[in-house]
Amino acid sequence: MLLLSCSGLTRGFQHGPLFEDVGFELHHGDRIGLVGPNGVGKTTLLRILAGLDEPDRGEVRLHAGAKVGILEQEPRFDAERSLFEEARSALDALLQAQEELVRVGEAITHAASEEEKRRLTDRFDRLNELLRRHDAYNLDHQVEAVLQGLGFAAEDFERPVNTFSGGQRHRLTLAKLLLAAPDVLLLDEPSNHLDLAGTQWLEEYLSRQNEAMILVSHDRCFLDRVANRIFELHNRKLTSYVGNYSAYLRQREERYQVQLRTWEAQQEYIARQEDYIRRVHYGELHKQAASRRNALERLERVERPVAIERPHMHFHSARRSGDVVFEVQDLAKSYDRPLFSDLSFQIRRGQRVGILGPNGSGKTTLLRILLGQETPDAGQVIRGYHLDIGYFDQHLQTLPGDAEAVRAVWPNDPETQEQEMRNLLARFGITGERAYQRVASLSGGEKSRVALARLVARKINVLVLDEPTNHLDLWACEALEEALQQFEGTVLVVSHDRWFLNRVVDMLIVLDGKGKARVLHGNYETWQRMMGGEMASPSDSGDRSVPRATAAERPVRRKRRFPYRKLEELEAEIAEQEDRIRQLEAALADPNLYRDGDKVKETLQAFEEANQRVAQLYEHWEEAVELDGR
Image (tube, rainbow, N blue to C red; front, side, top):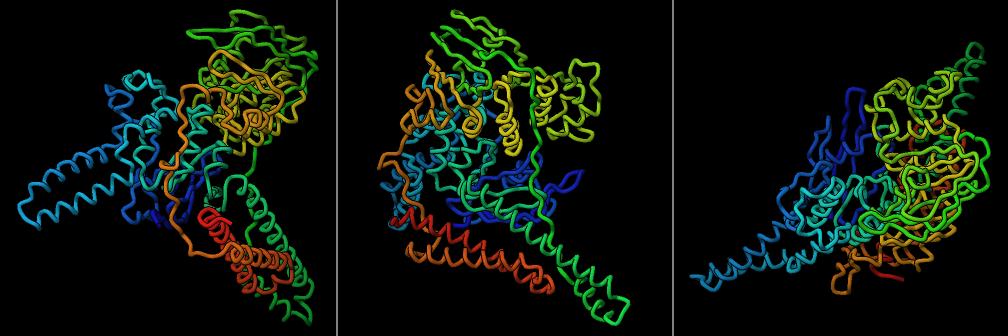
């Protein structure tokens, strides 16, 4: 069912348009991952769809009485309410329907006429269907399951809202939105402030929902597991891709290569025609030259494709440290409860070590003990020789807020030149006048890049990073991962980014939040395999409820969007269309095609239509697999 559509959406600010002529449709079951570099207008687009901002041009249309809900970044609560009461208030409409159902039921027994009884009975049936559809006879259980899934303990339920931290209030806002279950969910960084277990619960929860949703997230594993389509917002345009984030990466590269070959082929054709015109325009063949010149003027030019450019991060090689960087023996630390005890491990030069665990398990505390900034309750840390340690603080408090960015990265070296520091910042994506902005005025992503550039300028050989990907966009995350893979020194990193941990680390220290720790060689996938395929969070055996739908609780299978077809028929047509795409690609790569401007336009249109048809066929095939099986 079509729920929302938009067309011609254009929005700009003083530096020009963020996006132009954006249009798409949202149906039941669409789970759209919206991606793009920082600053392209993703949040602005969500606010326009929610009616909180107005486009310069274009319109948004809601269909079938659909309701839209957006995850607010600055939530408003009744501070005196308890956590449970505030979360339950998201279900006020259903609670009122319950009360009305009771009143209508009583009124039926006292109806004065058959007509009034029939009218009341119809109302009773409609209310009963509404409550049944939303499982509204079990509302308190729904509230408990969502709150526990998002990391609240049962003992938190009666605490007043004003006693919770900002991160906890963000989770409460998310809980209310999930409980309200609008037809269209607009979620901007929903996994912020969630630990790994909470993020995995949210992935499972959203994947079971039939509502349409648009998700803005920098968590690539989250997008991989939830999204079934990806919208890329870049260069003022919105481009749609079928499948999850991994499928998007493949399709984006394939599409870019086809567009690049098409542009190159046309440029080759244009160059040949211009060379011919220059050689013969004054001789006997001047009529042919004039004809070719007219053909070139009519030719519809193919734009050169623009890839999203990643920052060019690179950490310099530094002096060699000792073979053993950290030797940890029987380490223990407690505050109001034990964080870890009897923790022993060794980190050798060149290793890349990740620290993983739920919120409050002591990850940052362990880093600070290793750095000598905090004292353990028991045990000792033996630091190796010739260590030049660089520390990335997740709160970025090590950056001087009043300094210009170019001065914030400046090392204590009198021979350093300003242009050298500007070049360094440019490699991390801080260019032009941004290099002279005060650090305090930069965005979170820009501050993170400045902090990373600052480490490069100091030529360290041990990188200690606390949540380095928190404020980086997807392309900056990829650049950082490659830079760390090539770094010749030692890396110690706290992160909840599973994609990052899989690509970077070769050893994990896992804290369970209950005083125990485990050391293993490998990355996050290694840890998952060791946990037997269950959710690989060390807190899973605790109080957190991660509801798994029983047969009675599972939602009914989603309704069909496409007519019934046999899987074999769909697969045959997919193969046929993919063969047609390959033929069209070959045609677009042929320079002779570009002699005829109409033929170029016709071939490009056919190529785009074939790609759209294949995308639709894959959606049809996925639905057939889910609803009909093999």
